[in-house]
Amino acid sequence: MNQSSFYYTAKVNNKKKDIKMDISKVFEKIPIYGAKKVHQQLLENSVNVCLNSVATYQKELCLKTILAVKKVTLTIPNKQHKKYSFRHRWLVISHANQVWSTDITYIKVKAAMVYLTAVSDWFSKAVFAHKIANTMDYALSINILDPHSIAMENLKYSILVMEVNIRAMSPPQN
Image (tube, rainbow, N blue to C red; front, side, top):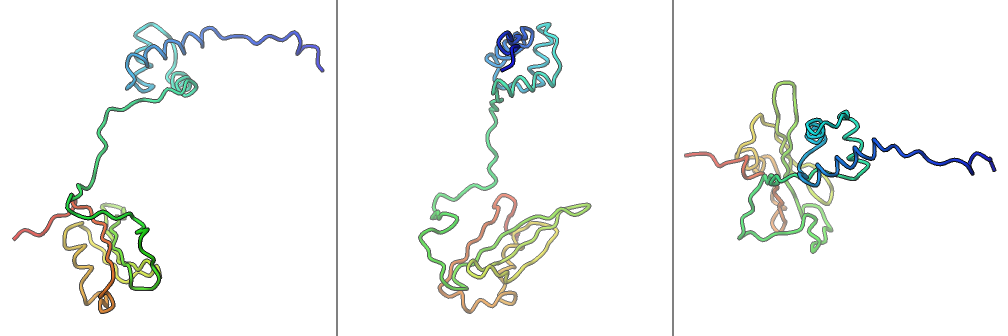
């Protein structure tokens, strides 16, 4: 064993310790402050420290900003509708054409967005129909169910799961 390990004492960086204490005090007063705001507050309190150090010290102290922002909900559910779990745990999918689903996704192109609607079978994972449009409107999700685009004769006792953003889409005005 090395002799120097017996005589070594760790140096305590008092300046770093004081800065961490100041950061903790600012964070206790106003927990919504991020690293930039805490940095500004420390500069106002005449504590010289850089922004990167404040961010690093906040991570070391496990201080995370508490945001008082309401979560954005894209859809408002109808309370009368029966709710199912996404995977339909009660349902055993044993054959094709038993459960179909529609989905709308957006694709970014150079200047705008393009919306892709698809109908797929859950058992075979096959896509039966798809349509592309440059606007996401009511007709996009309804026209995909057109009998000419899908052979719907086998859909007599089947389930069709539609995932549609109600706020973004509205029925055509007469």
